[in-house]
Picture 1 (cartoon, rainbow, N blue to C red):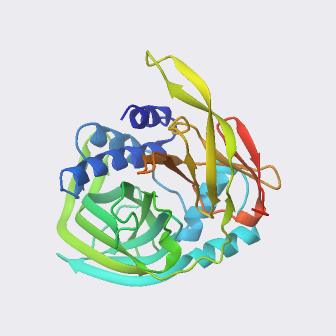
Picture 2 (tube, helix red, strand yellow; picture 1 turned 90 degrees about the vertical axis):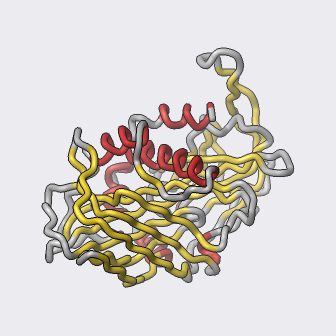
Length: 341
């Protein structure tokens, strides 16, 4: 818990990442109590208010997943998505077109982009008169993967749904982001999983006032994740030694130590590895591209496995072209990419 709380406050400067982390905390607590639906309350509500107040996306009419990725990439790197990266994103994306209707409002899952342990889904909501300046979400939601890719081992997930713009017809487009910890090493791109979504109560968020229910209702989806990535997966057996950190004594006293990593796995959407201690749980992971562009992870999580090793995973903000990655950095330790491993 200390590690997770520290991660949360470390990420105050990045609202999207903070929102996902707090949602992950709340979602895991709900799972532990046997209740999976997530409704904002207390600290979570305060964080959601701060995030939604600044999350409006000024994009062209009818925003697509490609629009979202391009904007995120530009904001984080100052550059444009490369041709190779565009091919990777296309290979991870599948059209869905599945709809559910309740109380006069129809929600359609337009398309999804599926990564190793994370995914993005583009939703379109029609049947309500949306304000182009408004910010919309759902009052309660539950998102999961079936069957459980963690196979009974510890797993965790964080997810969020928020509006990213309107279509030319005035329908609201929303982005669902989902990240998970899969300590078994299974990947959502294997082709054998389904995305389960439950959404309740269409809401408008008003800054300083919380969420206003516009249309009560329930919308559910079960979407096979049949897409198989054309992106390469790069693995390094290790061992690799990095400078980690371990909390000792008072909360402001940090002792640095060496941590041994192995089985590093780089995919288009993240990085995972095994560590001999949890001393890397609070470090950023960075992918360094061949042109020097640095892509820092937006979130991380870890779990202690039955063999007493720590499984750690990091997610990239946008799918990347693995073939263009020259090196990785974990904390302050740079690791040249060994493509022969």
